Image 1 (cartoon, rainbow, N blue to C red):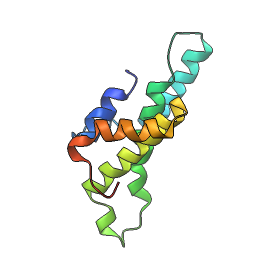
Image 2 (cartoon, one colour):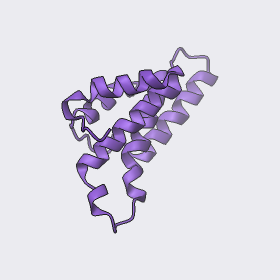
Image 3 (cartoon, rainbow, N blue to C red):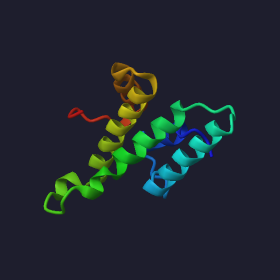
Length: 115
């Protein structure tokens, strides 16, 4: 039950972690952060925001129609996860350039030129 940054680094570097970035996991993490903040527990929102962006980005290929199989590959899923992580960092820190730089730095081992 960490912040989610370690999972984001793993996924961006090409390591597939089963059921880590599922929508249900992201929803449970979001609800747990809300309850932790309501109970005045010391927790930051940055890590869970990055994880929520990662899980939404990685699972975005589920809504792509099956008529486009070139957009449903593992490489495209990882690229969508990169975009989701960048948007999570941008939302957490109010810095879009910081989000892009974070995603480029952490996903540099498998970064495609299309991004």
